[in-house]
Length: 332
Ligand code: TYM
Image 1 (spheres, rainbow, N blue to C red):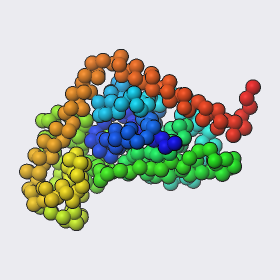
Image 2: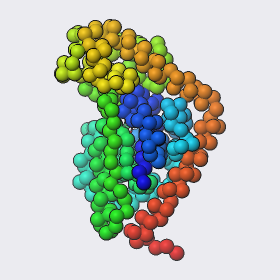
Image 3: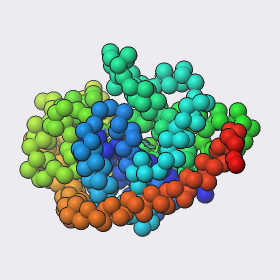
Image 4: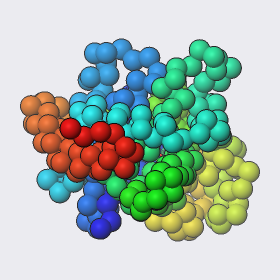
């Protein structure tokens, strides 16, 4: 049986990078897979969080996922800290993952920066928790953006090494699904940096809750170069900001970048940015409206998450039981 698992951090508001790179594919994949989606609050705790803000962000992110089209009847939607299997399996995996594998992780190096000695152990072992998230459900496919590819490779290595060490075929080696053209949406202020929830400038990203005016303003202020848009994809080479806006346009319009250029090639940025803003507002405003409706009913969202956790535990608990048995813990 094929099962997908994916996660998203409640560190701040969800942005269109998350949506175009991951979440919109999750919505579609619900038709083809047994699907599990997780708000990974324990991953958010790897950097300092205000407790009340984290709680609010967790509830709002779950609501945003439902508003974007995650159907909690068909799929399982839950919060990571509600299912203890994640942390337990992360510990067990930390006993089979060599330090050398973790030392290769570029996200840790970027996030810890020069303050490596002060970075928390949790930030370092973050990818082990991610492997546990996926493998606690024996998930076979993981739809993510490009930035998570290295973590997925580590997950496969951990699964393979566990199976080899214990002579079992227990954990699957999950396949990353990096889908569509918007696998890495870049900052609106710098076409070489990933659009990110942690960028201090709100002008670097379009949030799912931005209204039409905010969207128009942010695209108008987005960095570009003085040339008009080319008519062929090759003309975007060396023009990261132009390429990024075009990628966003194509993903929102559900067409290929080449088709987008056939439509918009030759346009000046002033014209193209206005069209892009209209398209983004048209796509995002129904989601924002549904989100407002859901936030007015927090009891509903919390009920969904409670139910999701029960269904998640029903899958993860037997996996944990078998994992402990394979590793040699005593059952009495
Ligand atoms: P997170 O919360 O940073 O991002 C959630 C999803 O959005 C994708 N994404 C992007 N895609 C395109 N362009 C961007 N600028 C962009 N920014 C983010 C991410 O690739 C991701 O798919 N470690 C993960 C969360 C996680 C997880 C998991 C994912 C925890 N456990 C298990 C899959 C399976 C993260 O921090 O994603």
